[in-house]
Image (tube, rainbow, N blue to C red; front, side):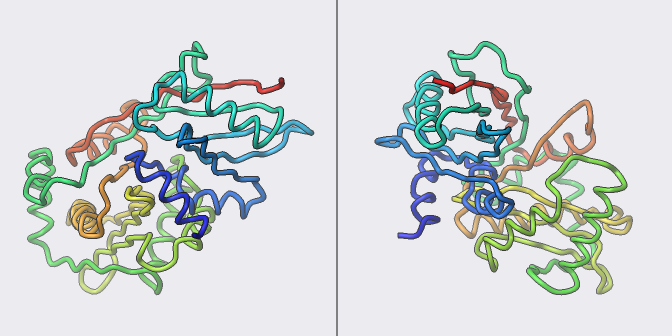
Length: 293
């Protein structure tokens, strides 16, 4: 059995799988020189992907958006099992981890919890559509009435257009996101359409909007979304995301992570994501623990 299939077998029973706990994400980090370990305690006591870098001779181990929630395990046991697994794998060092629930062994997080919006794709398309906010659904109807053509693309000029516009937009607006170079590393470990869904909307034969949804272990993450002025006028992003939800559902994907939300820094984007009918999830935060004995 390949390492990817073995990890997939461990994480799928945990339900929602965030991108940093995916196999392709770990491989991308390893390509940057990080030491990556996939931790699995006896009987599935802990399931977590950890990445290590060194501060001098001391390892700093980061478990981003993990460990995953093992069915039937409480937060205190998860924190203990993770610390033991990290100590066995990396030796004495420092641990930063971000569990879904607060561990009793730590009082306060050193970083506040990540907030995101998850969409459960199990219901029928009719139920998913009914769950959309009324204004969102009306604007989707408007987009469907436009002369937009939606195509799936994994190479070629339309994908290059999306990458270039994302890079430019990120530089101009200054929003925090994974750099395109790192996303390309993830793509290199998820070839073809099995693990990536890239949709582009065209008007008059020209691309006006695009999205990249990364598929991992029964979940998916909204990585890139861009619409130019014409795409925004035509509400192309709503059409792409709706088509993307249906396409993910057809591929057996259960959960879609729409990415971070922040009502203070990006209220408009937050309202847009919440209008898609998902549920808000706020993680416990990032905790610090020295493992020096």
